[in-house]
Image (cartoon, rainbow, N blue to C red; front, side, top):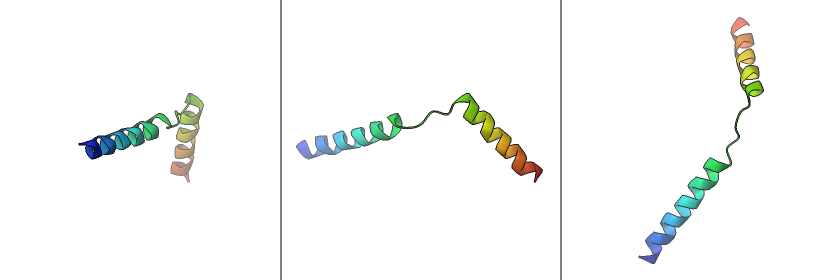
Length: 43
């Protein structure tokens, strides 16, 4: 019983840790990515 609780708690902490640390792209980053994609397509 306690082992199941510990496993679930560790899984939840790992999931929350990886999701909350993700970087959000700004509008400038998105525009730069699109510009790079267009430049690569032209080449």
